[in-house]
Image 1: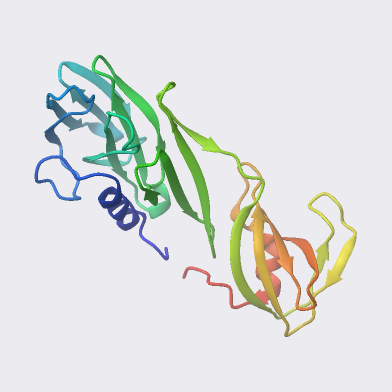
Image 2: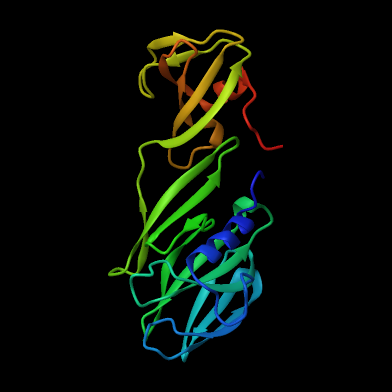
Length: 242
């Protein structure tokens, strides 16, 4: 994996909020911090259980969570929106591979612990209510945007028709560029030895990463679509993770 999601997470925590007490950017299992903005510190305790289960207690309220077999390391305190009075808890759950990591966000409204959602990482969270999450797609990072809906107490994903890619490759075997993802009419055929730019990706739901459609710009400046499998087989120089 080119970039450790845990490392990206730690950087994001530093950007969003000072951690509770002296915990640094490392996850802890207990802390006292004012989560609901009433000026009084709330006692927070996380108890990991078997098979990824855990109990998160804030004051006298306990919520049961499930990280689906991952190892639960602890939590950090973040402030997703510095414009409101609340802070959030981020429970770290680590899997065998970077892609298996999950991070669970919780808020406390003074009466209940509320699940805001879970993400693969907080790649970027600057305290403006926006969370950016990067997912490795073989040779590029898919960047997803979430916004904090405070009224619903949820992180809501902002849909994107296309995802930015922005990498270059060399054609080792000519391949066709289709007019669209639904039409097979050929716009251009790439020339062997030429450079192409992979500009964007259309990612079908639950598709394997080599089934993604890519928008490619040929050396002659023409745009067209090609599936991931054909792109990988017909080019070299893509920044593939070894």
